Amino acid sequence: MDPALAPYVIGMALGFVVGTFGHVIKSRTLIATGIAIIFAVAVVLPLLRFGQPD
Image (cartoon, rainbow, N blue to C red; front, side):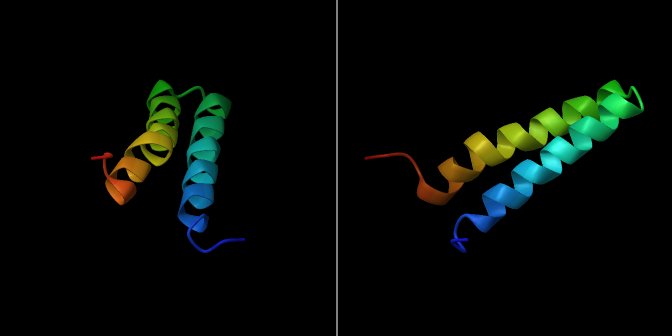
């Protein structure tokens, strides 16, 4: 695996684990947290890393 790709894979996996656990215990807070983690990794992290195009 490319070392630059590892934080994205780990972050996405963490978000899915948190969201799944939230579904299992029926916790809306954990479900929302899992979704927020996935959003942050998929959208915010690349923007912070690569910036906006000039």
